[in-house]
Length: 436
Image (tube, rainbow, N blue to C red):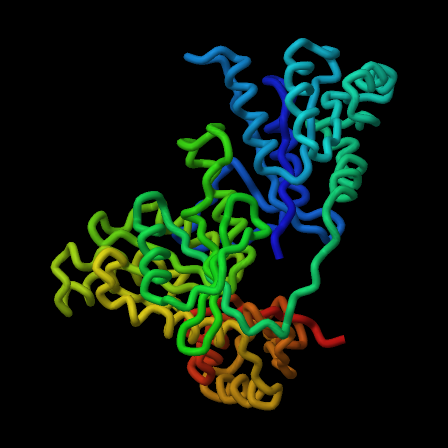
């Protein structure tokens, strides 16, 4: 399900980054520290009252080579184009400025829900000053303090009130949705075109729920697929064709709706840091992953070269040790036929359920091989385990004391589950709980 997008917009020096960092520090679901995965500071994933959303910061609007108004307008248009809800931030210590009014004019045209936050209201005596902000025309202004964290709850309550209703997942749909992700110029468009040109059973083109993406359904060997094409995500205007940092958000939108993410790597240029960052988004979202090495026809493509490249991938992408690797050329369609069977296989593993008795047999056999650890004279006791969800497969292990479960032993149990059950291509989650 696609997460809603919230953008923080305003002129310079109103505290956008302070508010962003405050929300990140207090309301963000922290992801585990995975080697090789870095996060862009322009966005983060936030949660309020059990509603997750993507938060983007349009900070950094400073006077430079271009006039300030031009930069301010560009940032506001970016937020308007991407966001479902916009937080319009003003400085409560300075009153309404001409720059605030310029931003307000742009936001009026958006037809998006606007929540007005009056920042830097650091003490109750300043509450009286917020009434002038009604004149901006966005309804009730919310007094907040980014420095002290005051009023943010009321602000976020209003933000999520504008979110669309949560959608129920369609469990009966056997169609496999996959997205093609990667840094610029790795051949995303070429791969999509190659897949569609080779298969003539294209049903139709339809608008995706993600803005600026096109979902393309097709059928191969009786299996229905839908490509969520991030390569086709282009802005309607000329707002920021070259602003690559915002492509992160468009990639996230596609990943959220996919079952499988194809992470493309350019065989000519090899692995770079941005490849790991893009792959990290899919891993953190819990999607099945296939690593696709494109342009394999342009390099020395013998078996030894393939083995060496695969070793480099395993070294660089240790957090994706479960992901299969496919070598191909979208341009020449060499080895292209090997891709979709792998996509189908990892999608099935991503949705796989195993019986509780089988899971517990695997866990008990693992403990027999490697007994549970002790800490300060107390031994971890594993009582039983059960699978609680799929996409990705998630398990709860009930124990006498969760603090006795060292991360290395949890990883050992995960490896034993993978040895017994084919979970190639999908991450799996293991949660440790105390038995009530």
